Image 1 (cartoon, rainbow, N blue to C red):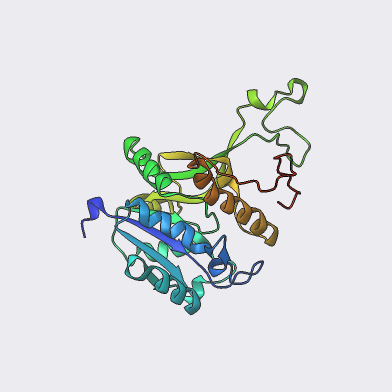
Image 2: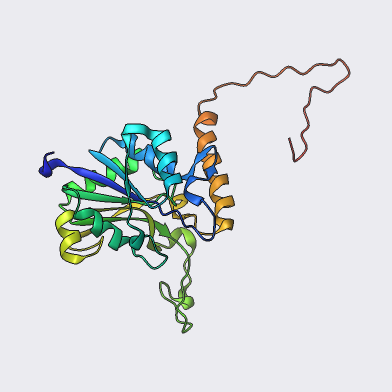
Length: 253
């Protein structure tokens, strides 16, 4: 293992999801939730090793059956699998077990990450000599604090949406961190921090049941859009001699 070139992906998947039972292994838009992000990580070819950390035998079984030797599943200690356990605590436990230069924390609750996202983020990370990087998407909402004060705009000069720059909102898709930075700051972010911008769809994460419905519809659309874009012609046969040659559709198709 060459430490100077070694990049690892780290994917924490705890078994005790409260809001959506077995969320990480539940099928969404045709495959398990975890599979979307892991497949993107594999396809990106930027990682020397991909690790999944879990306390759940069922998750281990699922991941190993799906990805085999492409992913290494490691056991998470029970004391680091509590509701109050921070992600940083799990990352720091991992740091002391494995040798690497950079760690990319990937959160499977954001299934919109693509292989190209990983590739472009790493290009930015290296080009700008960053110590850590987070992903974000543009938020063009008008924000207020709990004291009824505007945060990101002047209500007396309300801008049009197309003229409003908005803010960048952390989307939680993934984070890239140098090992030295993680150890010195005890945090995924520190030192020279950069931001990799993703599309607005990536701002959706699955935390609650209603999120699941929205994300599944968006994933289904993402899957079918490239197919529709490749269609160049449609052949239609309208039978009948006493028709006007028209076709009529109900809202259900």
